[in-house]
Image 1 (cartoon, helix red, strand yellow):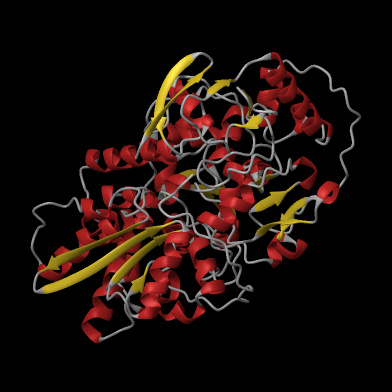
Image 2: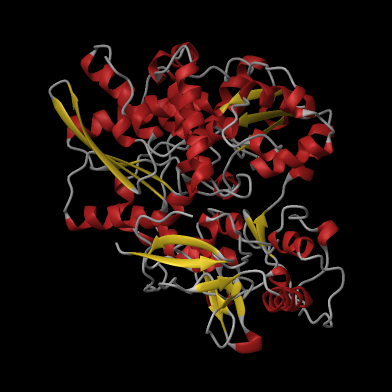
Amino acid sequence: MENVTLKIDNQQVEVAAGTTILEAAKMIGVEIPTLCYLKDLNEIGACRLCVVEIKGAKALEAACLTEVAQDMEVWTNTPSVREARRLNLELIISNHPLECPTCIRNTNCELQKLAGTFGIREVRFPQVSVKRPADRSSPAIIQEPDKCILCRRCVAICSKVQTVNAMAVHNKGSDLLVAPVSQLPLAETACVQCGQCTLVCPTGALYENDQTEEVWAALADPKKHVVVQTAPATRVSLGEELGMEPGAIVTGQMVAGLRRLGFDKVFDTDFSADLTIMEEGSELIHRIQTGGTLPMLTSCSPGWIKFIEHFYPELLPNLSTCKSPQQMLGTLTKTYYAEKAKIDPADIVMVSYMPCTAKKFEAQREEMTDSGYQDVDIVLTTREVGRMLRQSGIDFSSLPDEDYDDPLGISTGAGAIFGATGGVMEAALRTAYELITEEELADINFTAVRGLDGVKEATVEVGELTVKVAVAHSLGYARELLDAVKRGAVDYHFIEIMCCPGGCIGGGGQPIPTNLEIRGKRIAAIYTADERMSLRKSHLNPAIKELYKDFLKEPLGQKSHDLLHTHYTPREKPEPVKVPVAKKVLP
């Protein structure tokens, strides 16, 4: 591609033709402010905070939309530019409730940060925000329309990355509104509860349904035995939420911190990830050997499950019948653990600490009561656990490493990599290979299914059997893969699909900001955690062997079927909305 040379603030810079002024300025260390911009996803110039002065231009231009040109001269910090940005920012603030101290995004709000950057102490315009009720219909996500600044980021990520189209722009002019499609309550749309909108919202207009007070109440009740389980991805994100570098591995400190909050037992969802591999791997082998429905699709991502229920109900028979690791551990806690510990399951409160907002939805599904109770009572995200630790005054960085509790706290590296896209597939292949061939794998690292490419595929020789597999993360890429399956264009045996970009490490409940670079660091940390484990294959987990010996008896057996497997049903299919999917783009 041809390069062009221009000047930005009197600094000469050479960039590829087609580069925007915003990106060109970043290359020389000049950060132009934005509120609506998401690279390659939402480049609409709506907020007008990125305006710059261009020699010869009649008016200020939006840097996020304007491409560079040969010999262009740009100024990013003239008096007219500063005044225009300040004016636009004040206009946005005049339509925004001034509730910063009580807002869930206080101190981590892009609007608040820019107001501080520009030294805004008063607004020249009267406050004109219209009072609209918050939408609390969803078990996972709350929308406060009063705090919406009409940036359309949520619309962009929901349509172009997830292809769900649950959020939309309504009306025009002063009546413009960003709200769920058809202005329905969010729970009545095809929203998959993934929470990606909460990660890109610059203010507190979209956020997770905070359940920390429910947990505090349970912890304060002497009659309740409160257990917490921690998902694989949480060990590489909680430190980040509490001020550490992205990708910090804080497994032992996390366990210690949760104990200090008052939890009676701290269990590891990695344990039930290992269990999922035993059940799901056995199911795959059974389907291949008996001519069952193929390709088999993974079933551990609740946002993905709701997506297939809405958009591809004809492929529901392809889903693995396995519950997610969260739900498996909830069921076992109120059956196997309750029996061993001689505790009435009615007195057990199972709290899940997950990177995912959709897990809140999954926990209250009617299918998830096979223990005789609601298997998982409360789900917390990384942001919520961070709040609880800060409220308690715990100095997280000084905590010692502590171990999980037995018997549901023993896990392998295979369970840990569930947190990254491709991890479920890799863990399954490690076990399936050795169960089928009865030989030890020479190299357990299946690197072909790793990484942040939208769709990955591999062919694995398992003894005399050739197994074709594929991995997709984010629902736009999942849609591409499923359409290929429906056309008969592919002949995979096994497909892993994760709802969120990067897998669970990029879940909707993770620290804000979450971007491509941060996801990469979290994934690298997940594989480091795997490498540090003494056991790296699910079928070698001694606690899993004991569970089968004493309780479940065998994979796919009657008790496993009753407690660990389920089915899903079609949901109303939304009217099709034609929006181009952003190819090979993740926010």
